[in-house]
Image (cartoon, rainbow, N blue to C red; front, side, top):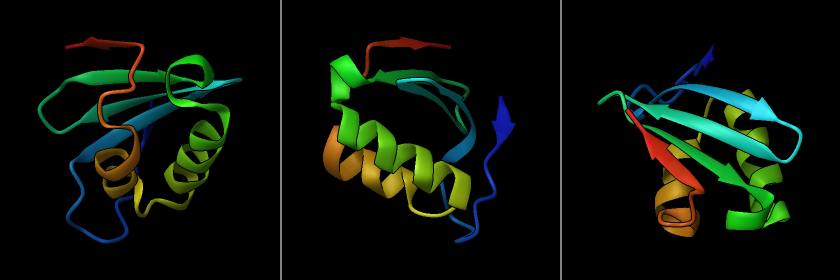
Length: 75
């Protein structure tokens, strides 16, 4: 997992991992969510990967667009 830059300073995202057609996001509570092109849509995965690399806006995008579209959750 790569540490999320959290440039806004108030994100619940702490880390992420990029895959070919997926992203796994770890939140401050320790829960990890894996989003895939199949579960959330390819364009959403692309946007999430860009936001993760930029270190800003990922948590907001997740809560507004793909909140329940994860493939799996783990802790």
